[in-house]
Amino acid sequence: SHDMVVNLNAEAGGVFDSWDAYCEANPVPPPVLKQWREDAPDLARFEAACTEGRDCSGDHALCTPDESGKVRVALVGEHGATNMDHLSSIKAALREVCAEASLYKEAAADGVELDVAHFFAYLWSLTGTAEGASLKAGLRMSWEAFWGEPLTKSQGRQVAEPLWTVAKAVQALQSYVSREPFLRRAQIIVCCEPLWMCVLLHAAIGGARLVVRASMCLLHAFSHVFGASELGAFWPLVR
Image (cartoon, rainbow, N blue to C red; front, side, top):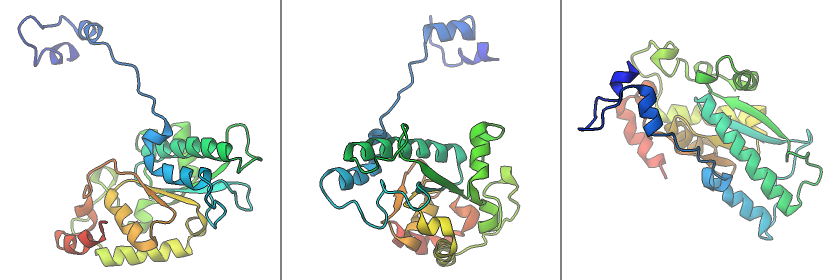
């Protein structure tokens, strides 16, 4: 029970009668609410482009909506909750940057309107929540539909042998992005998990619109998709 767990590593004189007693003696610190600049420092380069007098009117100007009146953001990653966290950072950054630069005067009170799409995402803990329903509605490509098998056993993965080579994956991503209407026109593409997929995506489309956030081990689940023999083809792409 929890009452026993808190005493497993107890030193002399440090035993607690209960879980509640442990919690009272060790209060949970308040949450750390970071500014977007701390949470997603890569977005600072977008801020600089819009606030330091440089041209911000290119094809992918982040404070300029397309004909839909919104800025298109593509979230590429298997972890739905992490994707939603990144979306919050994007919203905060654009709201502040575009307001300071007076580049989007038509923006609503809560900032630039976004048109959001998800790729390869699982809901995980978001299942049954409003956020999960929103993500599912915006999911344009599932992991299974693109990669051929679920990423993990918990999602139903059964194939023991890898199905892909690195070269084949880069080519497939490049072909898919060129055909997929939303990705082709997205002004920001945020990639996170698995991190090796972001490396392959960068190799496929370059980094002009791509923001990558490293929040996991580089090769986590790599062996689920590629064999160890593919590491030699993967490492040159890490730059």
